[in-house]
Amino acid sequence: MSTPASDARPVTEEQVRDDLMRLELYRNQLSQMLQQHQMITASRADHQRARETLEGLERTGADPELLVPVGADAFLRGSPRDSAHVLVGIGSGIVVEMERPKASQLLSERLARLDQASQDLENQMRALEDRITVLSSRLEALSQGAERAGPGTASNNVVLD
Image (spheres, rainbow, N blue to C red):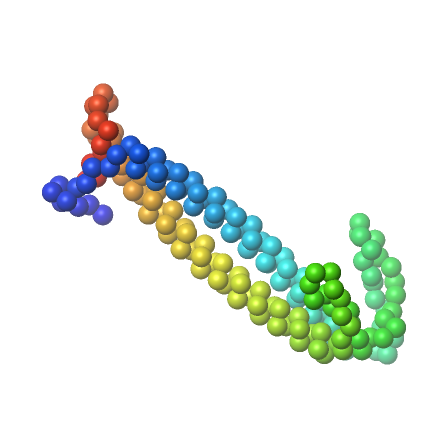
């Protein structure tokens, strides 16, 4: 976007420094949002696997055999004593026992909330990326304007073209 010379506003070095600082803050914020998005994606994958496992139990015979992960890629073979009930974490380290269909429904609801959180975060990230693009373009225009002014010009103001 270029403006007529009469509408050009001088930009001070302080404003440029403020814009550079704001740009760095936006980039840091975007990086944090990306990390949050990765966490949401990982949580969604865990919830999806849990729901699929519960639904898969319904298709097994009377005494299904399961592999129970114990960590470090080690598993125990086992079978559920009561495959009709599931222990589900509800937060703050609290676990409740509920019937499998209800647990599956709860996981589906959580998946929907995770999908919504992911969508909201993606929208925020796009908006922040737009701000970064605008600010970067403005700073680049200022930089090019300063280069055109030539070295050795002693001025605290830079005029946008």
